Length: 102
Image 1: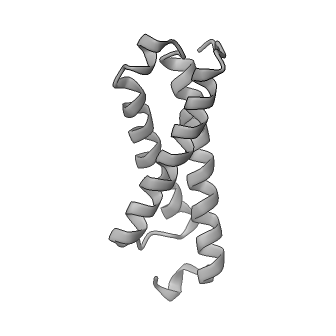
Image 2 (image 1 turned 180 degrees about the vertical axis):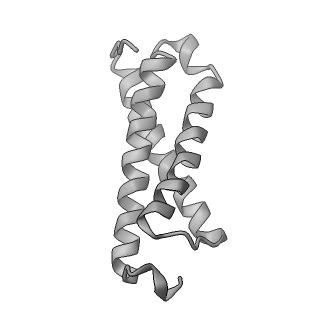
């Protein structure tokens, strides 16, 4: 982490974790709204593309905030945490039979 970002190490971790969690939940809701929550929809690979779009979309946001120095470990953390929250939120929506209209 470089010192020119103006964000302390702890604040940086909180910001990255918060954005990852919110992006994962948003990806789950968008997956449910765009693809659906039926069994056939859950087997579609489009939900994974939605997840990938939300993972990639976070990086410009981090640069705007002033966090742009990610190593391999940081990139894996962002992808894993976003995936985890996406998986939980999409699974809850799919198993509860919620119908979201896009």
